Length: 184
Ligand SMILES: Cc1cc2nc3c(=O)[nH]c(=O)nc-3n(C[C@H](O)[C@H](O)[C@H](O)COP(=O)(O)O)c2cc1C
Image 1: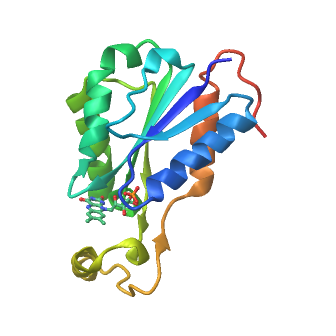
Image 2 (image 1 turned 60 degrees about the vertical axis):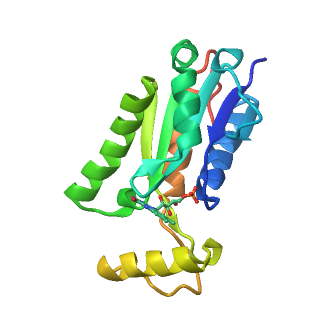
Image 3 (image 1 turned 45 degrees about the vertical axis):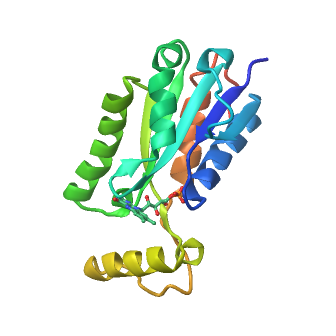
């Protein structure tokens, strides 16, 4: 049985957690998942898989360059399998029209940059990971958060992801697979 590729880029580890949760749901649906962080050493080929899920997070307005390059390089092969793209950002955590439009634009930009139109897309709220940041990143993010009236207590992390939404999305991805099993 072919696997589903779950390929992700994650600067501070949160998108890695989301990728792992999606893979868990797929595995429970009876589809083995190959969860991989994108890197220069391996270059998985989409057509070798039953489906492909790609996840990336936003930093300074952009998804990680390595995953954009991978998707662009494999756009033709990606078009031959069911696929999904997940964008993780703090914009997706804000309940305003402007923030929603920004989160949507991150996905649109990815599609435009790569030439790949995924079967399903999602924007998930990410996390503020003060405990993971180096000194300068913590300072920068605290300044940004203070301006937006968001939490600035750097002694803890703040997880804004709706994990039920992640599970629902993963189930919708499982439905794309031939002979999809109902997922509990
Ligand atoms: C330095 C830095 C810059 C960021 N820039 C943006 C941004 O421009 N827009 C946004 O919506 N979120 C931004 N974020 C929030 C991240 O997308 C969010 O923290 C996400 O959960 C990170 O996921 P990762 O741990 O997988 O990299 C930024 C976070 C950091 C640390």
